[in-house]
Length: 254
Image 1: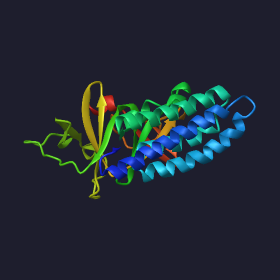
Image 2: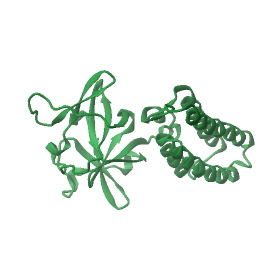
Image 3: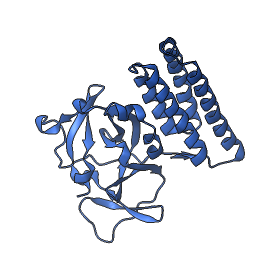
Image 4: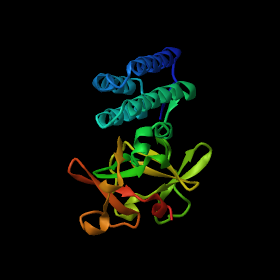
């Protein structure tokens, strides 16, 4: 999670960037009408690419990923009304970042209006060594690094230990106990999730981009023997010619 913590100059630069995004979006909204919106759309796509780079530079990782996803969807917007709605979602997101002074997956999910309208679901694409999987974004609370892992007094099947998070001891699921490969990478991140009031964490080596998927794009693992066989993996999708597992969190924490 990126935030405004640091010196005053850094915080001022981040606030300036977000304020400039809001002002530019307002200009685009003012120009939109039925005859111009398709031409403006190409300009917005170009500007979105620049914003995405600047967002990453300013340590707004989730905003950067949101913008990348928005850029890909822009070509599928079918009316001026939908175009304005998506621009207003971006403006609201930037305003929320200024108010809350932190960038999280949960905050990004609140402004994915286009995905919700198209009956799509957003997933966070993760890597655990060479293996890849996806998590429902709405279940992701935070992504953190540099958290100490504490072993349990007694070894328990399916758990690596616990990590401290906001005053709680959060259990860390052992994917290796479920057939995943052992992690040799020392750069470990923790994806803290919450499902039906239960918080837990997964170890990952990378978090990739956000992926928006329709039901029709999901395939069942049962019909593909090459996929990992685990009770919490029932579906997958294809990305860049690779099968990406979708973790069923209800089964994972059962």
